Amino acid sequence: MTVRPALDSDRDAWQGHLATSPAGDFLHDWGWGAVAALDGEPQRRYVLEDEGRVVAIAAAQVRRLPGGRTFWYVPHGPVLDYDHPRAAEWVTEMLGALVSAGTAQRAIAIRLEPRVEAGSGRAAAFRGHRLRRRPSVQVGQTRVVSLGDDQALLAGFDRDTRYAVRRAEREGVEVTSTDDPGDREAVDELYRLVGETQRRAGFPMPRLDRYRVAWQALAGEGRAAIFEARRSGELVASAMLVIEGHRSYYLFSGSRREQPGEPKRYASYALQWAMLRYAREHGAREHDLWGVAPPGAGPEHPWHGVGLFKKGFGGREVVWAGSFELVLEPSVYRLREAVAVLRGWARRGAAAVPPSVRRIGRGRTA
Image 1 (cartoon, rainbow, N blue to C red):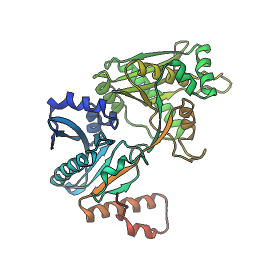
Image 2: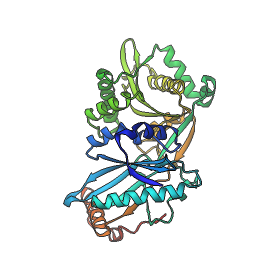
Image 3: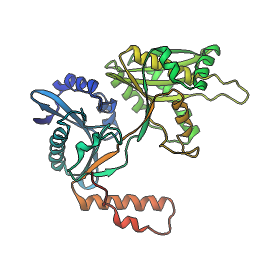
Image 4: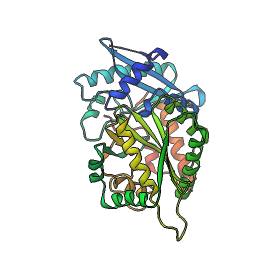
């Protein structure tokens, strides 16, 4: 087995492995490296070859820290077949290579966040490496819908969602899509509607150029489309769909809220219905709705409403196993964690720091 940095010539093999691996998603798409670089966390890519074929990939996002230190994060990776009998060996080889490379770059820690389900047993591949269990950096739970034919899809929806899909059609909502990476208007309009939605929910809004870079990188490789729902020519909802092999993802989305006294148009339901069928027709077998509220969360949770919306489309709830973190520089790591906690308490106006601050760094090991 050999682990080495990925070269530009590895791009096709990288994407081929990503498309066929059950543990892959768009955060490891080669094109997503442009988004990571824009975020100030450029990727370092590594491939593991076993008997001449790629069996694992890892895209580590490198965050610069004060004093020349770095922090490495592998979002939804490494990507490999965690059901394979040699999965634990592959994880060992990849982790060893990441540790060597990270140490050379003065990394204080490396965080892995594989796309494996909690309770599935697949996380066993990470045992024996003194890895600390940490919460997910990405959304820790989602819903995944199997993409059958139209009849099977509709049968999986709840009654209210089936009604909303049909009502949108009666209300004259029309959905179109574009996969042209040069369509700047579509991504800018999507951003505008996302902004309206985020402001209503009180969430921060990312930069416009991040949306543009993601669109150009993914649509430029034929792996993304923007869907627009209109009524009487007015854009009322928009969303981006990403397809990686046999999986599709509901990425960015936004909608215009009806004014008081205005009838509900159900445009977001029409949009999701169109995306599910488009994804199926382009080879996807399952659709990831990308984020719901944690199990047991009540109406007070900020994602409660969107979670109910997504639940209406059926599928199954998936909770991810979380992150696995290896600390390379314990003293610097503990100092950084303590400073982060103290700043958090200062922002909340706490009068005292709890004793738990003194115990930072003593996480569970896998």
